Amino acid sequence: MATTYAHDSHNLLTIGTSRAAMAAAAAAVVADGGGVAVVRGAAGDTVAARLPLPVGGVLSARPAAQVARESGAVRAALEEWGWTHLNPFMSVSTLTLAVSPALKITDRSLVDVVRRQPVGPTTAA
Image 1 (tube, rainbow, N blue to C red):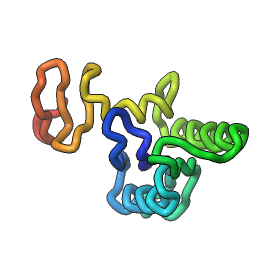
Image 2 (cartoon, helix red, strand yellow):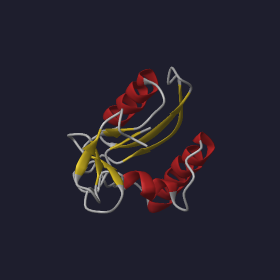
Image 3 (cartoon, rainbow, N blue to C red):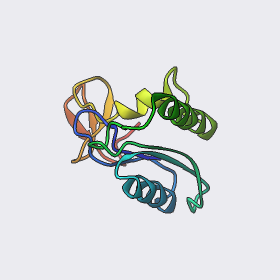
């Protein structure tokens, strides 16, 4: 999945199980001018859901009902992917909010916010 709705920086965030899938999700978000895209398959060959947010990468000028449907589809696609959280959409968007606990994704690395230290691939537990 990829999103520009990522607090606080609203940079493009990708999360996935393969580089191809992450690249496909990112390409869908870029094509929409910002927003959220969830893809299926290791090759990222199927876009399961997308929510275009072309106004600064965080807003849409489209009708609220349409945005709500697309947001619901993103949530459903994340749940189908296995993202378990009370609110999958918001939990993904706050992964980059580096001031809230525990592990967060920044432009420099994965960070243990409590310890204020980067977490490398060999140190993640």
